Amino acid sequence: MIAHYQQWRVSPHKPRIPASPSWKPRSVHFPLHPFASSHCLLVAMESNSDDHQSPPLATATSPPPATAASPPPATSAPDQQPPLSKRAQKKLLKQQRFEAKKAEKKAQLKEHKQREAERKRREWAERLAGMSEEEKLKLIEERKSVRRERMEKRSEEKGKKIERLTRAKESGQNFIIDLEFSDLMTSNELHSLVQQIMYCYAVNGRCASPAHLWLAGYQGEMQNLLEKTPGYDKWLIEKESRPYIEAFEDQKEDLVYLTADSVNVLDELDPKKLYIIGGLVDRNRWKGITMKKAEEQGIQTAKLPIGNYLKMSSSQVLTVNQVVEILLKFLELRDWKASFFEVIPQRKRCGADSEDVDDEAEGEDNAPEEGDDHQDMKRQCIEGVCNINS
Image (cartoon, rainbow, N blue to C red; front, side):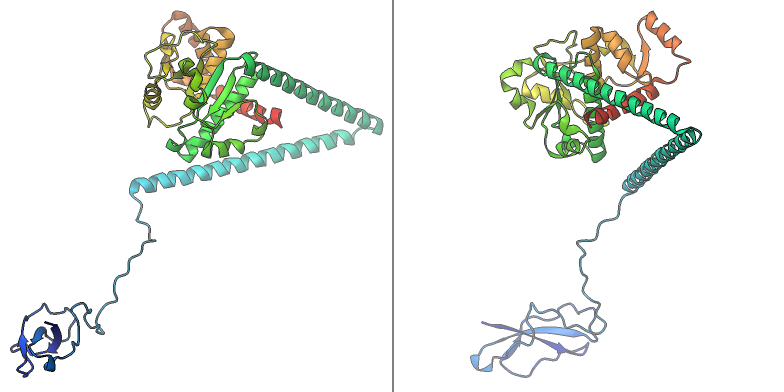
């Protein structure tokens, strides 16, 4: 049996049906189309004879006829981005302000360097203007001699540094920076970690007894950022693309993860141990992640004895470069207390347990803030890496 459908324009009171005896009503009164000009009735008729079949004018799946008053069909816009929330807008605005301020500072620094270079050239020209030819030649020769001495001294320092780092590679204390947390950090945090690694290498190269530094999990975005660092290709540092648990599989019992969440206090540095430092800048988003990782891998953990010598204003979590510098100071001085007070900035210290430390703090009341000096020294060390390796 074949069902046929036909649409008729009818009056609102009485439906109009064809007078053929072979057609019978099957269903009536479908909902009216909202844009139709008059009432419509969809009547389905069935035929009992094959001789009186009539082709359908409209099928059930056919869309209603379009009229002049019909609006165009709504189209989806998959490329259209949803509006940002207020929090996201504030974050975006803050980032834009930061970038603008950073660009402004960079332009000011460049302009300052240009002014200083121009001033020095002008002073040099004025100084030469009031001299005779013989005095000019003598002054120029003295200046060249000073420059040669400075270059020779720099070359000598570079040779000594290479010698110290080569000796540390053979018999020095091993410190491993774990770079397996790259996927948990933002772009700014990755750049911050690169700066900390640069400072670690600079401080280690200046030490009389440096350590042997490792970069484990060296791949991906961290590798790309580090390779863009000036002079990085000349660094005397071990770069291991594999995770440390695979690279030191035969020395697993000697691996010690340094984490503030450990219950074990580090009293002494064992030359046979390999101490791991988590390369993570997370602004306290991933608390306890290094401890959890070490427990899952079944390796030893330890924390620095900070609480035995001073009180921190916040948590005992330090940056990568601060941990490395504290360990290097301890290798040199064999004194945890002196190492902490030389590295940890004053702004991070809340107080001290001993009276002699309080006396030291009183003597520093009139001194400039240690954080500023620490930042200046950090900047000089990072610049020193570029200068020595260039």
